View 1 (cartoon, rainbow, N blue to C red):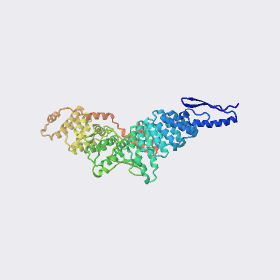
View 2: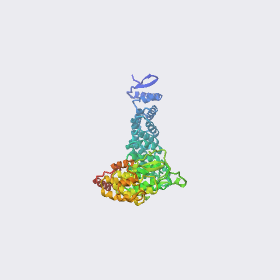
View 3: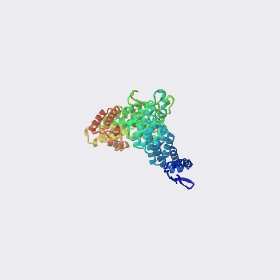
View 4: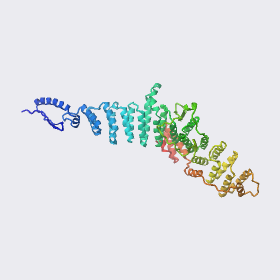
Length: 577
């Protein structure tokens, strides 16, 4: 008796499930089997979707529709395991699903709270990109990149952005800014953010065929926050070459910078030792009628002054200090000065080889907050004006004396006195030099002041004379006594006395008080401890190496580096990063 192919079915909790089938053993049974299969297919069509997802019929592979329903159901339920398993099955059997499905999967996985699922989402994107990158949507990829960056996964995040760029698409700049905001919190993320920002700018520039297409640059050229953020991270993590490349691309893209950019660019120039660029920037800044947001320019003036000190350029340092003392309280912009832009010159002034970033002196992007404290402790804002600190004065005095440029120090003091500028008094400077034991320097300053007909208190002479006596220098004592006597002739109560002594003069001037320590003296002591006479040599070597590296003249760069090592000068690591 023939056995009909009858399915064994059970009904449990109102759900129909198929347990097994008795397969046909001959052709006649096969005909019955085919008829039953059509009937069972109709029955299965009315099964609940959860039943289909839970148990697949053993005699056939799941169809496209079945797997797509499984993916959608798992996405609705937030079941990441089932989503990825169904996707893997679909890819194995049918290839990649349509972009709409991929887009929904990527967006859903981007909101996963687990780093593990974010990594799986990234792996899925890579597998899709290797097969057919055209199926990926730029918007969903940016959401995934943001999720990866927020979870401090900078390498996958930067890779996703690169996938967008390599496909010839331009990412949403606001989303890109958010991605960088999280990436720059770490050193690795900062380096990658700098790389990807350079690639993003280059991608934008490659799509510009002629001037009629310049509007394509508008989304990125108007977002100065993006550049400021990455530039500042390059400074924080000392990635100077990348910082310079970003600044060059800002020039090419046409970004109009703000005051924050001026501050950050100043730090870049200072760390690399590019004194000429800072001097050129000062000319541009000096051309403004006044400077609003004066506190933001602390970075610029501090960087320039610090670089003058590092190069032992005391004449330039003296001139900058005088300029700062000359500054008046800033006034509001009026007339055409509102529309005037400044220039940050990078490299040569030749437009074919150099780069220029235009900046707006009254623009400060609220999307980026820069700490306005002085970076080097050399300057401070007092009553709306930038003023040198005692640390700056101490560095200047020590630099002048160590470089045998006492005349520069004297000229500085003479200018302050003649222009009635509010700065250190020459008596305080001379007294500090005496207490430090720099007696000959103090004597030279006194002589220069006398030649310039600058009045000096007789007590200052007496202090130096006492110091000579204490150091047991009879020749200097006798010579200086004669100088004091000439000075004393100008005193109304003085009468020539053959037995002229120190006590006689001291009695007349009523000044027998010893010199007292001052805060300037404390600053001088600290600067002497940290003074390095070779620092300017280090910067000169670094500048040479940097120039050769940027020109791809690596043999010359290595040769300069070897010369630097031979002189036991190891330079700054920042140049080689």
